[in-house]
Length: 289
Image (cartoon, rainbow, N blue to C red; front, side):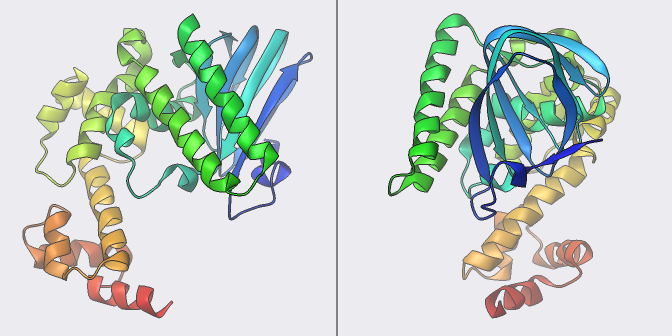
């Protein structure tokens, strides 16, 4: 696979973000991404999107995210104009991103990149005409901030990009997606996990949110996310624990409770199994760095 690294667009690793408009009059060769995501908004025309050897028609209003390790390109373009936004995953992970608790965000920015890598490009957001107008205006503001680079441009780019993410997440109605879209229908369950991972969650309840049997839910979840639901919940809890250990003076017991572990001893054992050190040792290492 020919790789197109993010460094092809920007050398600034401290601000791993790039936005551009592109007009494709000829086929775009197949390529893969090196540890970054690509948000694509089709502004006009149509083409054939080639993803891991399969062909899919796309046109004006289509919005999709291509994940890491996915080979894709375009063929048979006709008046095909797009906006590309390339960014590292961490650029989309501020400390408080409440939109992550919505099905639209989970479908567009979590499930679809994983799906295109594993099972092909079969579902994506399709903007209606009035929605296209709103998103086009937002892209213009974001593009201008990025390329004019007046004082405060990085803060404004982050703000405008997150506004775009929120707008697209709100517009992504999973009910528009064909019932055969498979794992995209997991979005409500993933959104619920994101908002309630500190609580006791049952597989049966999550499967019901996705309208699958427990067996189907577990299989599709593993296919979509790479791990089982309880492992995913533990991952979110541990990620939160690391932030709290690093950035607060809360006691280990308080942090355990805030991460969904009433028993701080059990929390410590789980943390040590995953990171190889106790929460106390992890905090000290962060303080020493």
